Each structure stands twice: as C-alpha cells, then as structure tokens.
Image 1 (cartoon, rainbow, N blue to C red):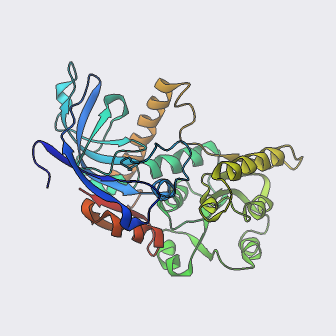
Image 2 (cartoon, rainbow, N blue to C red):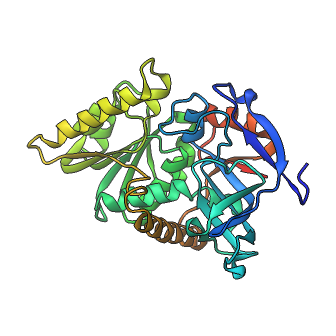
Image 3 (cartoon, one colour):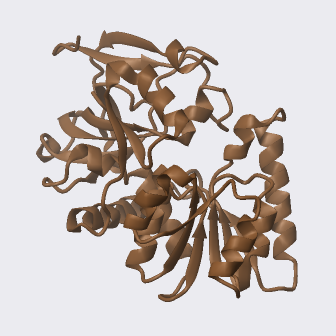
Length: 343
C-alpha cells in the first residue's frame, strides 16, 4: 500500500510471462534539480513493454527494471530551485521506462501540460500513440481526398491514426481482425480482414490506382505487398516491428534487414518512397530540439482530444496491482485501443 513515504511499482525481473511481473514497494524518490515528482494517474501498455518482457526491445535496460513508456499524472514536488507553480499541475510525459508506478521522477523539460478537463486515462491514449500518429501523417505530406491504408487499425497507434486521417480529410482503409470491424466503421474506416489471403486484391478493389500511403507496424512478409499497393508517388511508413516477436532471429538482425530493404526500394525509379518512423530520432544529437518538438506535437494532440476530434479508444482499465492480467489482456488484442493502468 502506498503511503506518504512509499511508492508502489511494477518490476520486470527478466524474461517472464505476464504473471511473472513483480509488485514492489520502496521509499518515495526525491527529485533533483530540474526534475519533478509526478503522482501517476494513468499509464499504458504498448508494444514496447510487450517486447521488453521478451528482452527484444532495442536499448532496453538490464533486468530488473520498472517498465512504463509514458504517463499522465500530477506534479507533487519539484527539485531544488524548481518552479513551484508546477505543483498541482496535471502533465503528460514520455519516459520509455519507469511509468508503471504510483510515482515517477521526470525531467521538467519532458513535461507537457494536460488540459484540466481531460480525463487522465483518455489523455494517456494519445501520449506516445498520438504523437506517433501525428508526426507520421504530417511527415507523409498527404492532402485531403487522398487514400491511406493503415495496418493494425485497431491498435493503440492505429485507432488514433485513423481518426487523425479522417480529420485531415483522408479516405482511410484499415486492416484488423473481423471482430474489430464494427468499431472501425464507427471511426469512418473502411475495414478489411488482415488475414484475408486476397487482401491485396481487396485493397485494389477499393482503390484501383493504389493508395497514397501505407502505415505498417508489423514489418513482416506483407511489407513487400504494402509497397506494391502504393499509387505513383506513394509512401510506405513502417513504424514498428511486431513480426519480430515471433521470429527465431535476433530482433536487431530483423531490423537491419528491414532497413536495407527500405533503402533499396527508395532507389527504384517508380517514385515510391519507403521509410522507418523513429519516435526517438534526434533525441541524442539534438536533445533540446527533440524535446521542443515533442512538447509541441503532444500539446496539439491533447488539444484535439479536448475538442473531441480524437475520441479516446480505451480497450480496458486495470489497477496497477493487476498489471499481470492487464498485460495478458493487451497481448490478446481482443478489443481495439489501448489498455490503461490506473495507479
């Protein structure tokens, strides 16, 4: 139980099944200069944590560690010399690890204010997922009236991506299991079954000239088909490597092979373009610029959420102490959207 002097956190001890996660209590951390102590109100389960429990996420810490890629919460204290007006402010932050806890210490420069009338769990669905979708769409330089194909349209990123696409005036075709099609239609998506052996033909029936962009979080054998479905001048954006979870090869090898393939395709004379979206691009070499861009883009997405342009897609809510059940539920992908943990 969390007291004024203790916090509760989830520890990933090694390569374990979801029921191998551990609940730990320790002393309340104290923020240093330039940091803030945030009481976590909502955090989420993403593909990243699912990869980390298998020791497949590039650059993840050594075991044991506390997972948790992002959070929404309230600032409780700031470090020495910090801005006291931040105390009591609801904020969002991308942490990469450490958010599966009742409290987390975060650099002040990584905090983005959350509109006070936005539910923390709703805000959590668009922190990493919303920024990813926003940056990919704008990087693809699409115009109203064009057509995009979104694989995994029922996922955490996918459900935000299709809504932003519709907001920008795009026609959206989305692939997902048939059980998610009704929910996708409500978002304005034309759904297709990702397991259909004639999926490419179904896409061509809907868009005979090809699609103007494909967004692919899987990067499996189907990525070649995605590239071939592009209209002249179309863009393939790969933003995940979910297929590597079931691969017997090193995830690094799978990723290098993917990048080599995308680079080779860009040399073809057909005008198509292919690339890999990297959320963390520039975070090491241009740290200040990366943080400014992240805060700006997250602020835009949170405001779109406040306006109702984005309707939060919450697959389920779980208490932090039921994280094992939450992770198992998330990996089953039985409902569209993001699984949220509420400490």
